[in-house]
Amino acid sequence: MNRYLVFGLASFCNHAEKPNARVEWVENEVGLWSHLIAQKDINRGEEVTLFYTNIDKYQEASKFV
Image 1: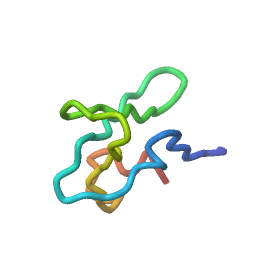
Image 2: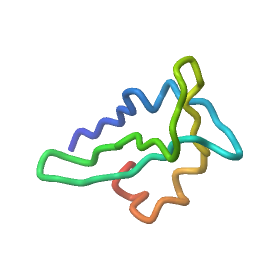
Image 3: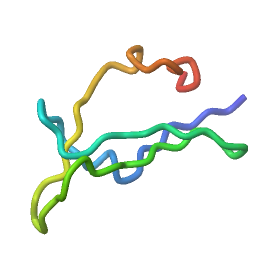
């Protein structure tokens, strides 16, 4: 079975202890998708940030590997 991990726009986000966005994982018949969700208004020119964590912290981590 082939598996691919593609983060799209989320891969351009840097880590922050107090991020302004989060990733929401959604699974459908095509696969597992990451949705980048703003947690507050993000101003033009402001960096979009996420709180990085280890993949084993996700409840569904087995779907990634």
